[in-house]
Image 1 (cartoon, protein in one colour):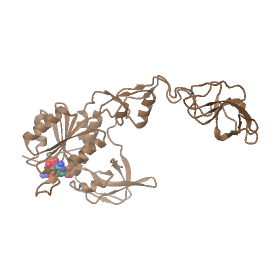
Image 2: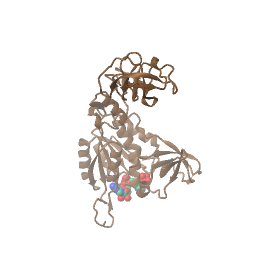
Image 3: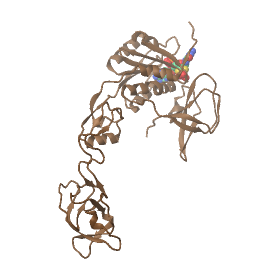
Image 4: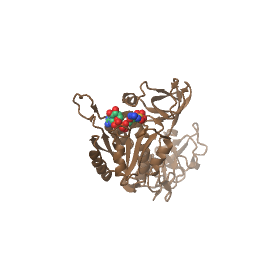
Length: 415
Ligand SMILES: Nc1nc2c(c(=O)[nH]1)N[C@H]1C(S)=C(S)[C@@H](COP(=O)(O)OP(=O)(O)OC[C@H]3O[C@@H](n4cnc5c(N)ncnc54)[C@H](O)[C@@H]3O)O[C@H]1N2
Ligand code: MOO
């Protein structure tokens, strides 16, 4: 047996995975549950927003021609014939030199072409019930026309749009209760390894606590997917087979950690090979960390076999599982946008044919992003990742000077 490895470029590995992911069937979902999901169809507006002509300011609705020549020193006096609050369905007639007191959002009388803000008026001390106007207004001042935001029949949200709080607001304003989206993926998480426990008791030698499962479950929730905890499965072929089969029939995707390297008990990849009918790929990706990775479909359900080392598992999730599951959920842009940041210190690395994803922190100084790496970069050093907010992408090379700019992948942080 030979272990000579061929490293696959990251992009090739990512394409291999993404090509095998199909979008889920759309469903109609309550708009309040739709945040972060991708719209499956265009949404057309059945009505105008605003639905009627209304005022953008508290003030007086009037005919603009009545204010010609008005100034601080020479105000014009208008009779106030009505008061219109938001929600009042009235349309008082306004004759020449007449106005209506009006509140923001209230319908503008048909006879008025503009509204003067209350700050540019005062009660007329000489004529009870009149208002002094200190400024000329132009037709349309403070007027919000019907349909000025959205016109009836207009496509207001395109298929493929990620649903934001603003999109939910638009849907609510149009009276939609449900919206067609790609559903949130149900993602099962399994930790593999006979050395794992979740007990709080003192550890016996050779055992460690399972950190990957809680970390991956929260990465899944944080990505907007539904996370399901399927526990720890020991390095046992039958137990793994049973767990993977059950997960494949009940969930949309499976994320495992461990068992994808070359150890005698690295069984994940073997079991995946059997269950996928050979339609799987075990790869050595040209990246560090997260070099080993297995991917296959078990009866159509993708299984992401992430490496066991805790940092590697999270980086592998970020680079493979997250974009693939986002694609399943209809996202047209499943990769996080890369930013560029300036190195605070020199970085040295070895030439090994891999792109390195270093755990790092970035912050903004006078509008420029600066990035510095953490001290511990081995793939078991999860504590260093815990205080990072990005991955610094370091290409093949040896020395990168302070002041050079390199890409970073910002990672979501709590709070
Ligand atoms: N001879 C070689 N050995 C290794 C290679 C290699 O190329 N040749 N690659 C190394 C790299 S890189 C990685 S990454 C790991 C991946 O190994 P596996 O995916 O098979 O994972 P395990 O062997 O099961 O575990 C690795 C490491 O991580 C710990 N672990 C596993 N699961 C958890 C968990 N749920 N919570 C916390 N820690 C976990 C486990 O105890 C091991 O220490 O292989 C290298 N070896
Ligand atoms: O590539 Mo392994 O994923 O560094 O530790």
